[in-house]
Amino acid sequence: RGVARPSFGEIRTSVAVNDVSETVSGGNPDLEPERAWGLDAALEWYLPGAGLASVSAFYRKVADVICDATTVIRDDRYDANGVDRTGYDYATTLNGSDGKLSGVEFAYLQQWDFLPGPLAGLGFQGNLTFLDGDFKTPDGTTSAYPGMSDTLVNASLFYERYGVSARLSYQWRDAWLDEPSVDATDETYWDATEQLDLSLRYQVRPELTVFFDANNLTDEIGRRYQGATNRPIEVEGTGRRYLAGVRFNF
Image (cartoon, rainbow, N blue to C red; front, side, top):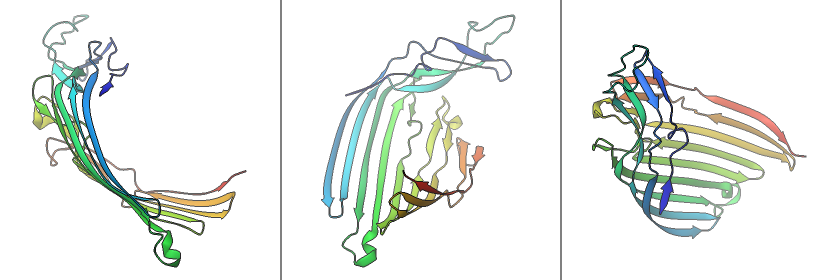
């Protein structure tokens, strides 16, 4: 059984009016907390080399789902100083209903210390997750959960031996909903994304370590689109990032 209460920002009693973009945004002091019933199950197999192989699953039934919503102002409650704000977009937070969320994860972690000689420092850590879920929006339509991908993959090949610590990590996630809308054709999504990172450490002495990190080696680009991938609204990239240095412990 779980409860998630709205943040202070979501229940604020103020609004912000922008006459240039013709929008009004504000909080909702009448928000109810999300309440969920859940069930979790897992099967784990412990392996040599501090290893673990597991499969786990969960199910959640959620009431009063907290979600962002945009509606059109139909009255004069925000009119002031002779400005008619009827027809402005009103962005706030509302309670939906009838939410459900389920998923299953397969995970594996093991250092292969059964390998001969220096190869005994090799190991692997990874997981594969499948998610599914939706909820009813305040207007009664069915929507996916914002921020939830259907499939996630994490995999790391590592080496730990002779003072060397190295890890090559890969992450991938399917496209996910960014902002729902009343008209499904206007919903915004982030496209599927992946990232490859490298981390190297060498302990020269017990108190001295040199390191090198390389992030986003494949120079991935994030793309946000509206309704379909042929309607992009944002493209961003951080480029490859490198960091090297020395750590000394007193």
